[in-house]
Length: 385
Image (cartoon, rainbow, N blue to C red; front, side, top):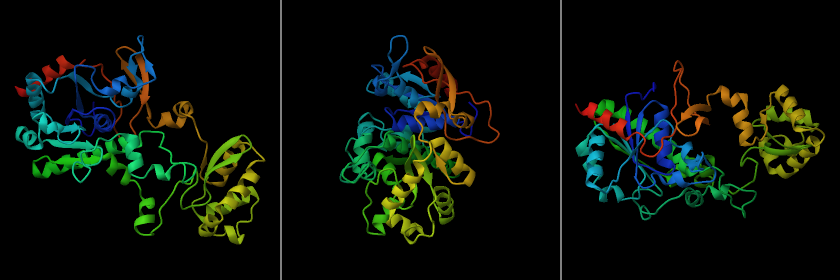
């Protein structure tokens, strides 16, 4: 593949979601990603479903989501032959990604010191559940556990007494995103220093790192944020509102936008309880009731058209089939077509980045277990000559 990382080789020892997502992002940028899997079943996400697809209903759509643009080799990391192959690959790689529990890679004979002895230029991305050190650094971490421990569930749901998990595995995905940009920074630094370094992140760090204004509400403001349903924690009106045939979203982030909304809905914007954002937030329940009373007169399409004419940010709440059928989604390259060896032509969620002038990039389907063993060995032997 062409791309900003077209000369980079990534050795992906990770599995499940956080590490594979980071590696996939680097693959989207053009890196050669060699995914190392255990010969007995491979990445455990190959068994995660439903849904499963294919003639034998044994291909996990979960695995397909995090492993495009990779080659797969089957290696037993505990065997002598497997360890020798990994040593050879480490010498020829730029990046190694792992999300083992703390200490596992050391016990396999691949401590940071050993990896940098084999290749001083190697950038190592290590993703853990709760961090590589600290009083709970060795804890295993899964997405929903991290969402709860890092406070995200306390901010999500209809009320403070009903914490909800975010529907997507957001802790895993954020850790992958943070890890990928950490790798990019370390590769840039390597151009100056000639040496690689270890980049560490965790599910805990990834979620805490996006607390943003919720975090400062506590650390500076002394207020503990809590779940508020489908309405913003600091801005009103900003959220989901009922109309005649369902729900739509309206986001009036400043007083000018509020005046446009008020004019459409027949509400006096200068009413003291609604005059400023602070006033509107203090009377948010009344504001929602007044807005929904007016919105009940027409359906969603009517209001979305009127709000668009007025220049007010608003939108529908789409199901995923609607999102992937939407012309705007497709225009942004957010759906890619690949050729799968069993499934044939399939569509996958596409990369979230686009680069000016980079056209004609062909993505490859997530690999079958070990399908690229011969090709990777041939490539490795050529590199070593």
